Length: 125
Image (cartoon, rainbow, N blue to C red; front, side, top):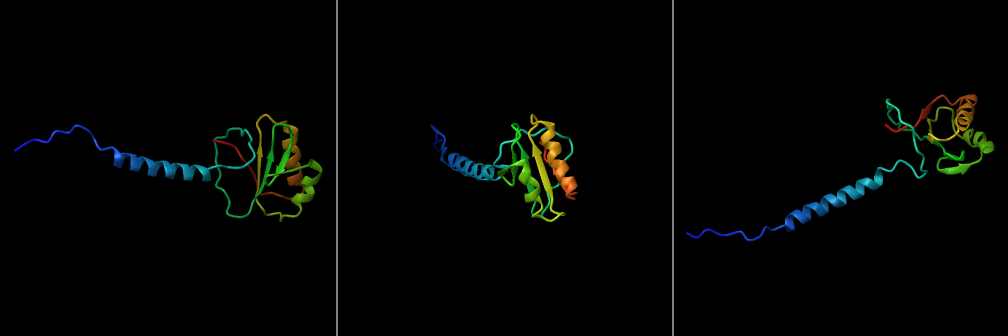
């Protein structure tokens, strides 16, 4: 009886598995993006669960520009745009950590003045 000698290892099945894993990683990575507007979020230790309802997203960039649902809006038009939504709609505010605090207070003041109590502040953990 002769013993077979292995000169090489068949790596084709290993390559097939790695390509399938690569496809899975690339497709899931595209769904993980949080938004289109790049904002450097501050950190926090607590975390809340996202709501199922339609939500209002307000982003404040470092240069003071305000985005309402991914569209840039002037400070004067923010209140008018907010009043088109009901008062129980969840509002998520994300503010760049290097933005002026005045801009954040301006947005929160408009929300509180108009009775929007379901307010969330977006941070990274």
